[in-house]
Length: 72
Image (cartoon, rainbow, N blue to C red; front, side):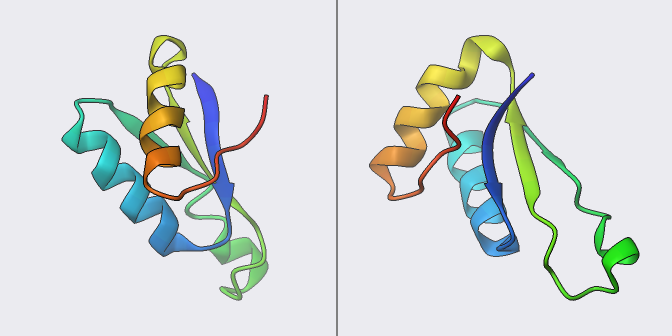
């Protein structure tokens, strides 16, 4: 799996996941339960992961919808 997106905004993760799901790309959100460690103040970023073979297409989909992806 490759990191597609890293953000502290949970709405971006939800929107990106919905966009990818609509295109048949499975995405997995990581670090979503880290808020328990940080005291629920939202300072730790969450990551959205996709399969290696879906990374290029997923970046194009998110870019076309104004979501900036992680470089790498």
